[in-house]
Image (tube, rainbow, N blue to C red):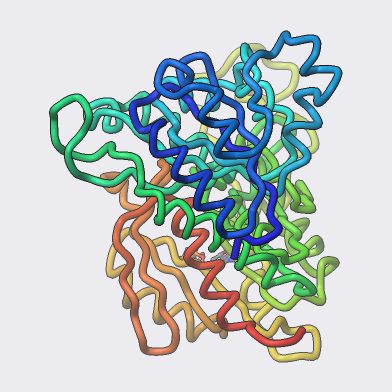
Length: 410
Ligand code: CTP
């Protein structure tokens, strides 16, 4: 599984660093080559000499080493690998990664790399559970950083709980899975809608909704990582454009529909956007004033303007409609605040899509704008309820299901 692969291993300063030696040994036994960067902290636990002896390669450690930079600069070091693995990844190093700091060779190589990164966190349980670490992990997950572990058990600090670095065979398995997954959706085309749409009332006001785009963007990223040529049609959100995805930014539902139609044909369409159901019939071309022209200030008792609405096109229903451009698999989302599964089942039928992902978005769930999601995947009359997980994890699981469904030659 790892044979012929080049791994750049970053060893940071945790007691679990001793396991990294075994990790290198087993990776090499499996036919991989390993080049290692040992941070200053890491070198407090294991020596560069032992790492060099086991990897059979020079070990790198100093960003400002002129000899190293002339032999193999940090940019080349980070690019001449098929995968970057950080094991152990301490809380401090995870925070550095989340911040994008670059004050040593390891962090600089990570900023410079164009390869995927897999981390094996290792720390005390309280540190792992700390909101700062949770936030840092969510940021990394959001950027597509893969992780393995940590597991539960005896910790080096004498306490017990979550925080133990994953065992070496688990890390090898995660690395193997990464390479064996390869690009199973290569040759396939995917379309994802995400975020809200906004509909103008006048040049400064609009109707919209609270969608953050986190779930849709994560799905686009997950599909692209599986090798699908992915187009993301995104409403206005603060999420960054996912890497490796062709992003079309739109504002209105009408623009989202035309962008979707332009992206066809695709093998799979995932409509995760919260499309505004209505738009303003005649949006004003000038800002609507409280008082009539020529009259200063608002007059007490003046009636607020009446805004006439008309229905927007239903993009999911259009994409699901029979025809030779219909994607082989069309997936809708159902954001509900009550009778989640029943309403979603009714939407599946009404819109004619193949699968629907239902989620309860009542304010108390914190799903709107939050990093976690609790969803039900509905296929026909079968309802699969997934446990609460990060939006990133929902995206990966859904992408895996799509991969399985589309398995076979394009
Ligand atoms: N959808 C769409 N175009 C619309 C409205 C919704 O493509 N004009 C899609 C959404 O992207 C989602 C699904 O339809 O995949 C369901 O959206 P949702 O807002 O939950 O349902 P609505 O159809 O808007 O129904 P309601 O607002 O009554 O719940």
